[in-house]
Length: 105
Image 1 (cartoon, rainbow, N blue to C red):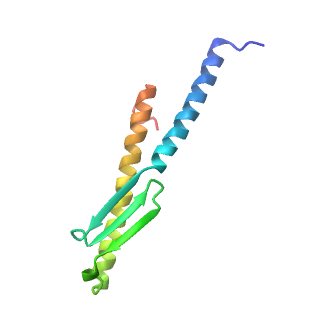
Image 2: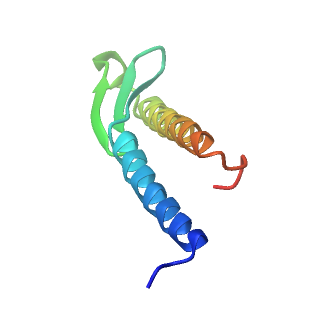
Image 3: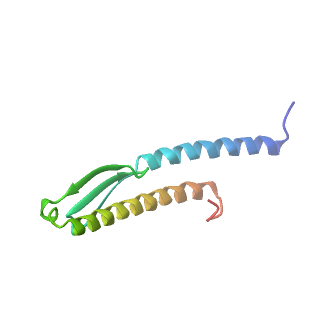
């Protein structure tokens, strides 16, 4: 039984969307960002799933616990924001290629 032309087109579009989603997930997983706080006294490395890959703390700041906590928090938040920004850029570029209206996803 042959499907009407619109059904075949819909299936092709769904397959393309699934392939693009897979590619997007792979691109997001490959994201690597680095953010610092306190003029570089704290540095955080993070991947696209927001898993922390590394933390570097300058020994000079280790004595002031409150300041250290604030800087670590700031570095983590900045790294998470960078991941979001890069992921959003990748999604925008990919969805733009599909001709979908902005803001749809």
